[in-house]
Image 1 (spheres, rainbow, N blue to C red):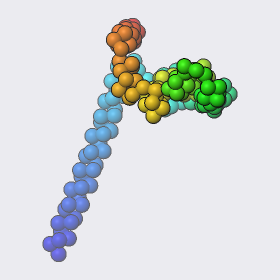
Image 2 (cartoon, one colour):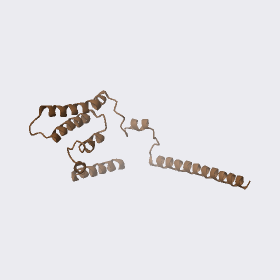
Image 3 (tube, rainbow, N blue to C red):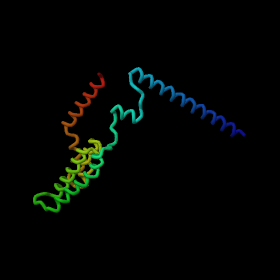
Image 4 (cartoon, rainbow, N blue to C red):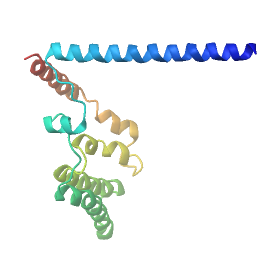
Length: 164
């Protein structure tokens, strides 16, 4: 019998803790809504609302994007195959693979089946296995000082835009 008493007290304590936690969460969410109202922000969190406002990009549904998703790799592989078949003198295996990857990436940049940022990372993933460049060498190309200068400039522009 003493065990039942302990269980019931612990169950009551758990219920009490759960209830207090849920009221705390409700209080915090209402404070967040008040803060957003004070700042003049709307509390819209659905993807449809964000897409309508232009804050997020929707998945590509255009015919060109769907075609480019398939056409990019096909044309890239075809380019590599043609260069291997032609046996062009002075053109190394790495250069042939690079030409195919360049065509693939160019098709994806033009048709945008993926966001451009994702497309820009393809060399980081594809060049090391194809032995075009080592992973360290490819990664170092993404951190050139000029890139950080542009990044800082864009961040300042976004900050100024938000401040207005």
